[in-house]
Image 1 (tube, one colour):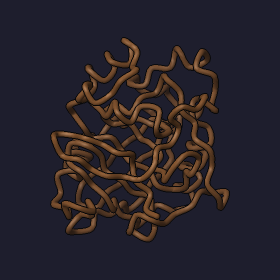
Image 2 (tube, rainbow, N blue to C red; image 1 turned 45 degrees about the vertical axis):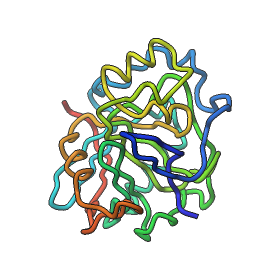
Image 3 (tube, one colour; image 1 turned 90 degrees about the vertical axis):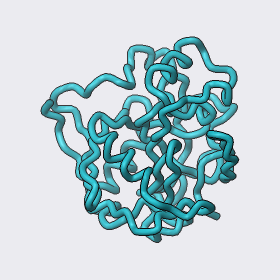
Amino acid sequence: MKQKIGIVAVCGLLLAFCAAGCGGKEPNAAGNEELRDLNQTAMPEEGEEIAVMEVAGMGTIRLRLFPEAAPKAVENFKTHARDGYYNGVTFHRIVNDFMIQGGDPTGMGGGGESIWGEPFEDECNDVLMPIRGALCMANRGADTNGSQFFIVQAKDPNLETASGLTEAQKKLFEENGGTPWLAGLHTVFGQVIQGMDVVDAIAAEPADPESGKPLEDVVITEVKIEKYSG
């Protein structure tokens, strides 16, 4: 079964995806109260580990990671990156004004696995949201996280598509864009700090309208873990 991202209505187009994720569950990462001071859109601290993603012919995407909120997702992503797991892997699914998805070594959308060789649990909370630039785990249902991820690219948050958001969450989406209808459905474990123009360029690549597969491969040449130096 392909790993995809919820059931989404965006810009009048109904996009069917598999399964949900964390919805209706208690957060299994750090307690929400411990995350209240976490600013998703702030730059990393000097010396903090970040991910640097090189995309062939496109450029570089730098991402802050949130190990305090999603320790397993971050450990999984960092270990895969250091092992070269993502090198040469494509963004196999792109939907402009929504997201770009990668992390499947088969390039077909149904492959990949976690560093533990089996799916791991969701790590959702009500602090980190799928705003524009958020790095999220793709899944095929609750607690089925493997190696696939997506980066939210949507600029218009379409707040009418989501319910149950707090005023603080609504403000976060209003100021940054994103996909509020996915709030609580996928683990958010990182945020783009540089290279959203690259994300936008990837999302704009011609793709099959049904599968979202780019007509020409968009290849991740390397993902590195580096110390942030400003």
